[in-house]
Structure formats: C-alpha cells, structure tokens
Image (cartoon, rainbow, N blue to C red; front, side):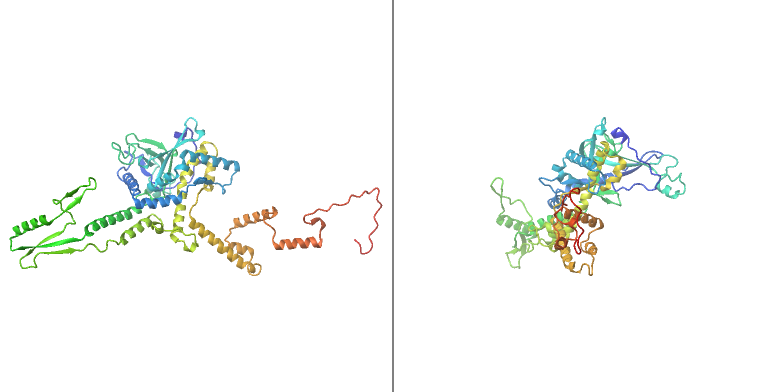
Length: 555
C-alpha cells in the first residue's frame, strides 16, 4: 500500500514459517527471481492458455442454446426489483456498535453507487460468470487517501495478469524442496520472500501488441500494486495446470457436439428430403463412348431445371449446374427391360429429434441448469413441494454458492474503503470480516415452497404431540427434535415471548385467564388485585379515639 496510497499499513509479522508456497487458486503466474542469471516467466504456456480460454468462453456464450442457460443462471442469482437493491449488506452477526454499523452501511452504498451496481448488476454478474474472473481498479487521490475510493473502473481480463514472485536471494533463501530437506536448520529453512503484483498491458490481444497476457518486458506494460486491484475469480481451478476456469468450461464439449449434430441433421435433411427419380436409358449395343454421349443428350433434352430468384422475381434456367438433389440417369444395355423410370423415396425419419434433444439436455446439465427449463411448455406449479423437481433444489444451492463467491468483489472493495477512511483498522477488519455478509434478493419459489411445507409438517407433529407433553415428552424435547430449534433460537424466542406477553401483543391463554380469575375471587392478596389499586382511608390520629379491640371471630 505504500506505493499506491502514500502511506504504509503494517501488520504484525508471524514468527511461524512454512516451506510451502501460497496456493495458486487465484491463477497467479509464479515466477522465480534472484537467480544467477535472470528471472523466468512463461509467456507461451499458461498465459496463452488462459487467454485462449477466455476468448472461447466469450464465443460460446453467444450461442443461442448456451445464452439461454446463462440467462437462467444470471436471472436467478441477480434479482432486480423496482424498490429494493439487488444486494444489501447484512451486519446482524457483527458484534459492533450501531454507529459503526451505520458507517459500514453508508460506505457500502457508496461503493455500489461508484459501480452503478443497481443498474448494471446483470451485466457485471454475467461478465464474471462467463470469463470466470473480474478485475476492477480502485482509483484514489494519492494526495488525500483519507477521502477513500474516488472511482471503480473495470479492466478487461485479457489485459491484466496477477504475478507472484518468489525471491530466493541471500544465502539462506532456498527452494521449497531444499527447505523441506534442511528443515532442522532454522537458518537454512527460511521461507522464500513472496512479492505479488499485477501487470497491465493495454495492447494485449490487439494488432501490434503482445497477443497474449502481458509480461514484464511487454511494450507499454505497467506494474500495479496488488492493493490497487480488486480481483474476484469463480473458484474453479484446474489443479493440473493451475488455471482459473469459468463455469462454461464443462459446456465447451457439449456445445460443440450439439452444433455438429445440428449441422449433420441439416445436411441429411437437404439430401434426403426430396424424392428423386432414377432414369434407366436403353442404349442398345452402342459402344461405351457413344452410349455416354447418348445418355448426356437424353439428360439435356428432358432435364428441366428452373430456379426462382427471390431478389429479382425472375425464373432462370440453371441446367449447367448440378446439385446433390439431381435425378439419377443410368444406361441399360440391350437385352434389359428397356427404358424405365422409378422413384427413390426420401428419408423416412426426418422428424426424429431424439439425438438433438439429448445433447441439449447434456448442455443444460453441464451448466447446472434444470432440464425442465429447456421445455417450451414448461409450466410453473405452486403446488406441494413434493411436486418440485430435485434439480430445482440443487440449482438453488448452486446459485447460493455462486453468490458467496461473487461477494468477494464487494468484500475487497469495502475493506479498502473502510481502512482508507479510518473507519476501522486492518486488525479490526481481520476480526470483523467473517461476520460481514451480503444479502441478495431471492426469487426461487421452489425453495420457499419446500420451507413452507416443512414448517407445516413440523407444526402438525407438534399439535399431535401436545397431548403427550408432560407425560412422555418435555417441551424442550419438542422444540429441539420436532421444531429443530437451536440453543440460540430457543433463548431468543423465550425473550420475545416474554416481552410480547408483557406488552399485550400476545393475549393470555385460557389457563392463564382462569388462574387470574381464581386469584381475584379468592382475595388472597389485596395488593395483588389485577386492574385496580386499593387506597387506604386517611385517619387523623389526634382527633380519633383508639379503636376498640376486635371481638372474637372478627378480623
């Protein structure tokens, strides 16, 4: 942060060391520095592969079948409403003051306004879903960093690359393998120094540019501090190549197979759809050359190929052209059955689309989209949850996981904003970050139906078991085993029930009313009468004589 923000934020160094390097789940390019000759940076391997993958992802996203599935995913994850924002920050689990929570909410609204997220939420999420990653530059005023982030700008993933340098300089800097072998020697087992940064090349992928991911020596490339960039990935990684993948990776093969099946189907239908004729021409005893010449003359004489030009409205004669749907002309020697004309039937199974439908379903399964959404006449039922397909529930959980992963985008930007404006310190963020959550608008009715029916079934069981409370079961057992309430929920509900009874929100039960009526009628305690207060008669002790002692039996 010192190079970018004008000041340095330091953290307490850990005494513990490790011989392993950080994982490459973020797709960073690992390079080694401090060697005897030069640094090593692979520009033809991993970088070029990721560049080609992103280009391929964007290409297949434009296909109609794949685009329909992507829209189902994006529409389910990002729900736009006229009144509510697609995402809000949730701080109910954060143990902090109300003033601090209000400050965090205000800064989060400010971040969304810089990104224009409420209006562009669909495009932002779709871009992240297709590319498998998203980059944003956090623009700040270097002269006044305390004013926070001034702008948030999108960066094309084709033009930026995360680089992780491993510094091995010094006598005590060894490779991870050497560290593992010399782990007993604290001096020799010092962990290598890690330096992470971004490299941005505006000419990457263009004519005259590097044509691949930017490199250190690329013309016009800029080295950017890691804290200046917000980087959010899909979380899918090819462990063999350490390459970040998109959710469209599994759909590449399925989409290619579907396109080949459709192309072959078109060719087959064009070639087999018409009924073609076979002309057997009697050539007698003519030699081969003259027989072929006679056959061509007969073809030219009787062949009538007229075409209609839709652009000009003219009918033209295209006898000089041969097509794959032409009739067959076959010679027949003397002694045969003479000239004959027969008809070759067209294809009989042109209406079968079973193979096409199979690959369409395979494409939807590869994108985790329920197959039922592919049908044209698919209807939405608001019946019992038992009628809801299991695929819809799996799809709902899949969307929830994507939302959590996408929330890292807000998390990193919010961290920078809060620290720059001195709302919290880096140490406080480390302890509070796990309790900051993001609440998205929900529009999956299938999950709501499932929860509603589960609650209905549980309440039915409670009503059935009510007659056995105090005899076979306790109230605590019913709440834990049937209603599935946790300890925190039981404590919270007990407090709310007590408060609402005292406030009169919950009317008293029949038993409580009978007990109160019994207390009133018995007159057990005058000062405990409900709804009234008895006042004692003022007595002038100076003018009133002493009361007579009560007679027997009187009180």
